[in-house]
Length: 370
Image (tube, rainbow, N blue to C red):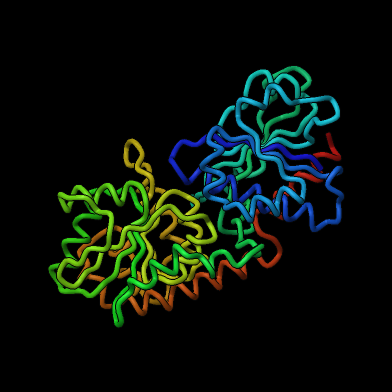
């Protein structure tokens, strides 16, 4: 099976992060089915190849390329299509719009648009539906919706590590040396908005001993502005320690999430990884016009919150919606226990298959029908 995956980077890391994990997962699955490299190719076309390589890490890319993966520039898509290399399946991530000339050449390929993850109920009705073809003799375009139950496309589960890079990471080992004893450990990968600065102010005012890994990007920019001076080394402010964290690959980031007591995440990829990490998290959901993003947050909370413990549910709401820190901080251990329960629930809901396997199973009958 030949699969082409297309990714345009819109929100820095989230689009590329998900698309790379999907690419990796599909390459792993097809390789495990004992196809030869010549029979089975996955190609990822992206408009930011350097970012993909940073997210993946050299060791992972090398291993996957030995399994038949190719990583191509977006602009090359119109140049490298050959009659004997036509993909059977083309995956558009997040409605990224395929290059026009490429699209005219793949009229026999199955087109699937992999949409954004949502917990909103309507995606269950939309999952798997098709639109009319946009070109003569072309297959319909199907819509594939990731989700949290068996009526959706599921979630990308954790990949088996190809190496021990995350465990032996010099970057992480140096960072972890900054953790103090009896300190709460927090990772911050968010959009650096005012609610984050309020969070820092409140931690300081209540005298909380906390070590914060401030991830590369908008969060570090916000801290630099808040401090009013360069932020290129760990800084202690009363009881909190701010630790600038460089860009790390996905395996290293996953290991960071697992080490922390609280993770502030954003977008889609880090949002899902935080849940697999089985730790309390705050989802800094991508802001949209007319506050539509808050509806998506409420839809997730509707399935996430414990139904048998309304007091704990309110604490989680306070945390997720950036209410005063003292309204939920003292219950962080209970929130942690629930986060572990939720991760177990996710594992149980995907015992049959994660998103990678489900999308292959979705594809197979459509190819036979086509």
